[in-house]
Length: 247
Image (cartoon, rainbow, N blue to C red; front, side, top):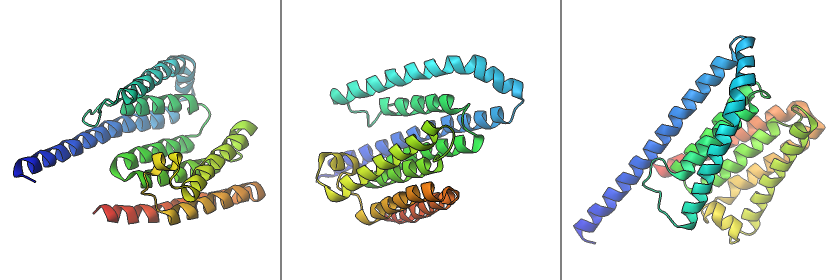
């Protein structure tokens, strides 16, 4: 390979790193603004929260819903047209993630405590960072772990629909995806989700912990917290291992 081609490849890699860094910076700024707004509004006077609920939220929900639909449609259109967005900072995927996240915050704000809302938001942010910084296999593992842990933490919370059916469906979906990846790694779903780079052992442990946590959640609901802590601890171990591989 000539020096000119090597220089072009190096320049492309550097530009791609800059784009990823800029995307993460944009997302991080939006995250900080949303976190600051949640902490300020949840800790404010009751009249302020009522004003937000009665006047501001009815405007923001349809606004972010329309933005999410438009960004999602643009994302699908560009994927079908095979438009390369790898060098675009404000890609359709980034706009979809940000608008969908803001919509979710507006929808869940009245029903969740500050702690639950913040944990859910930071979990989504974690998945965003993992998607851009780590291999696809680790992202799929992170998605299974985060969605499963959130589902367990919401078990028996709120109404019967929100507190039982939704968490069980989410855990079942995560377990089904895990089984497909483990049993049929060459299938279309497994190939799209992990690109053949997923380690089987961490996913097996995560699936076992999720299944045990779901059973414990119905038998001894008081122990759900410890099941989520175990999942988080195991995720930290796998994250450290994958981080060391990148160095």
